[in-house]
Image (cartoon, rainbow, N blue to C red; front, side, top):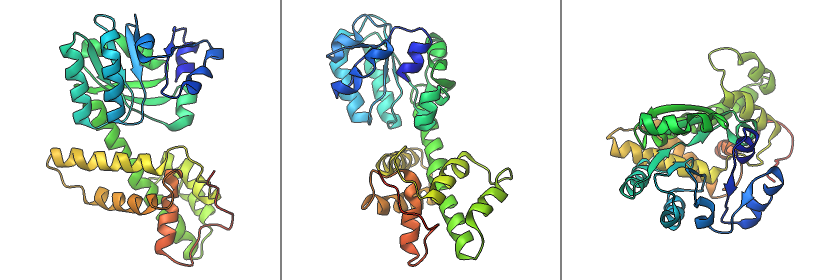
Amino acid sequence: MVRCLLRAGYSVTIWNRTHSKAQVLREAGAQAAVSVAEAVNGADVVISMLEAGPIVAQVLQEALPALHAGALWVDMSSTKQAEAQQFHATLQAAGHAFIDAPVSGGVGGAQAGTLAIMAGASASDYARVDVILSAMGRPTLVGAPGSGQVAKLCNQLIVGATLNIVAEALLLAQAAGADAAAVRAAIRGGFAESKILEVHGQRMLERNFVAGGQVKSQIKDMHNILAAAEAAHVTLPVTQLVTQRYETLAASHPTADHAAALLALEALNPGLRLGTGPDKLS
């Protein structure tokens, strides 16, 4: 994402909790800072991409005293809606602006600058960064602050459930005597087509579970989805079941790719295994 911003001609100062991760981008033209305060000093726009809401809160508090007057903070992490709304309130009280803009598209989308970016903001704040966000992908304003996280949760709800359904379809195809790879090819282009069937269906056939999106991250998202559903007084029975499947998988493969939903399914079906190749986990 930093490289995309640099290619678009922006001056980018970067900081990471693990300093070595920031240093590798110096050769691409980024300026590496040794502290959060140094990183945000004088910046009109601050972008954070962090592990979870509590980490965002910690970094935000460290950065707050050094923020430029009227700075706009764009958090592209995946957090709870309530956390995003609290970040907005904290920054607004200090005279700054906030946008929650989580993304979808994985490592490939980040590298190619094709991420789906779901922004929660006022129209005026969004207008300030629309062009900047467009350097990293396809931004869409989806509502007030906190709404970006709702959109991301909807995205992850569909991703998490579809991964499990694709695993079930491919294992059923093989168990019932069909060629699972040929079945996948046959149904692509029809109503069952999806990015999950395209990318992760192939990963399942290859038994490639080297992480893009990790199981533990998917579980975090599933728990956030259920928290949002509870707050909105909505019952999501399929999501509850999908969450249970990932919780089972996390006990053995927390850092595997979330396509490892196939492994959890195979554990329920002793003696059945998709394909013949070895599992690729690292």
